[in-house]
Length: 68
Image (cartoon, rainbow, N blue to C red; front, side, top):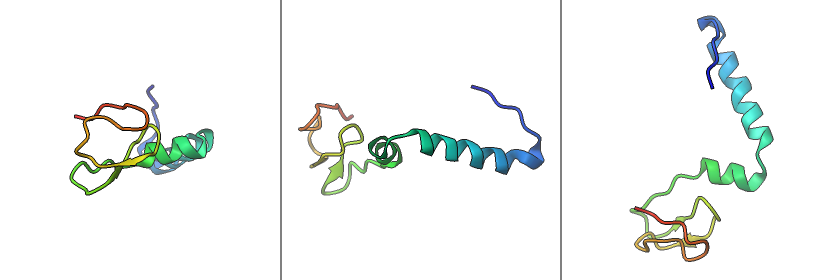
């Protein structure tokens, strides 16, 4: 997708797109999209199913999403 806007309107266009993106997502999808997976932490959260697990595992124990 491409969007052309005047440089003076860039900030306003970005805010409108972010608001529309957030509004169209379910709460679970929004939480997944905003999640940062830290594979160095003692525990992390799967971005697919939001289950917590030890990041040393190659896959999420709940949904099977592969990491690495």
